[in-house]
Amino acid sequence: MDKKIINQLVSGITELGLEVEDSQIEKLLAFLVLLKKWNSKFNLSGVADIESMVSLHLLDSLAISSHLRGEIFVDFGSGGGLPGIPLAIINPDKKFVLIDSNGKKTRFLFQVKTELALSNVSVENCRIEHYQNKQQIDMVMCRAFSTLEDAVDKLQPLLSNDCSLLAMKGIYPEEEISKLPEGFEVSQATRLEIPGITSQRHLLEVKRSSI
Image 1: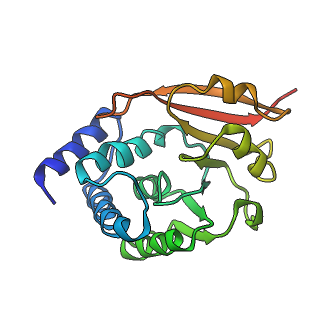
Image 2: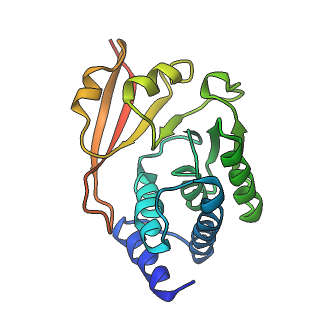
């Protein structure tokens, strides 16, 4: 791997205030190599070059690590494994379930899990509505989904009083928030500062209303 790319990743992680081991850096870089290799066949990402992937994929995903609460997390519509794979790499004590209805994408995710020996990752090829939840989920994450309203509609069976949605968004989505289904609210909104990304990024936590 080009030393420039390694330095970009390491300095970005430092800016995010994260402590990551050398072995985890190696796995993050190995994931990027796999993502780039499989991307041309399976259309996993619209980003083609490794340098852009560091900021737009790895650092963007890792930026929400400090917002994870609990032990078991679902990455809904995981696609190319974002944000689930990077988060699983630096949080080996937490479990991540990656769900996608596209068989090609879940084959890629299985390959990543196997090659990087990610024992804390499981992959499900299904629609979120058909996911058979066998354990208490602490948080559901979604990064590249259409609207908050649609996401909450599909995720309602999983979003108990003890499970919330972490939605990664660009510009603060006021209109989407106003259309949230009755009984749900944004409990926390955070402006994310991602090294190498100048456009706005926000993280919204959506929960069942307390009243």
